[in-house]
Image (cartoon, rainbow, N blue to C red):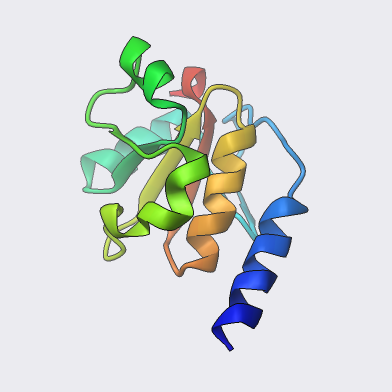
Length: 121
């Protein structure tokens, strides 16, 4: 059962096309909600976890205030570091990795809002 669930989740993740979000229109998708910068800021102000899924080096060079860094390639193994009882706002450099991360989080039962690129903040 666990193997089938994991295989289905990995298939869903690997078939996800890379995309970039302009952050101008909120839309509901299988990857969670796509949110604009203003809405993302409101969510974080109300207690949502702000999740940066870029590499540790990228995070060290620049990141949004209050962001937590879990690189997308490590996210499935580190889900325990992301509180599940509150919404998650996810972002990356251009939107591709945040979309992958959103898919992982939605599959794991998180309420996800995909900001997309860091500059949409």
